[in-house]
Image (tube, rainbow, N blue to C red; front, side, top):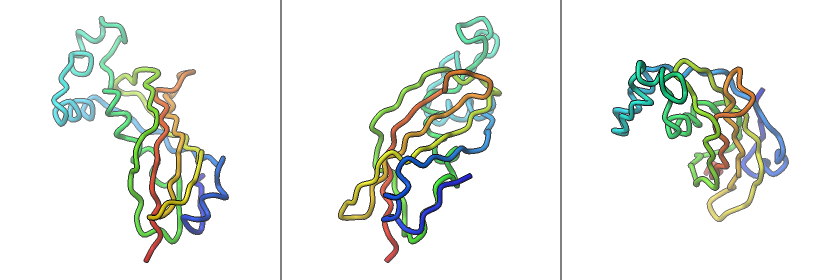
Length: 152
């Protein structure tokens, strides 16, 4: 279920609301493509044989890969009518709490933590937890900021 508000200004009324996304698989092909895109070719991400004997028992996704998937994982969780555009405003805090092994499924739980007016629109502080299927601890927790610019 998503959070839906009529306008960027109406985000203020949704502070404290949360929504949960669908499960999404992070496979080895995606990990390898991210390694190529970022030129981060550590064996813990790419060498299945060596990683099987390593500290995580399998290859793992880059922490920054998991972070970069936030737009995909949160897609459709927050619907704001009357918005001309939404831009990333920044990050206040990111913590990688648990590795995501290849083949794992993750999903996002996003909460609207704060909303403030700005000259350009409304800045929302979003607290997003990336859950790891079957795990008691999340893979990632991030406090992100998004600027919702009204239409017109």
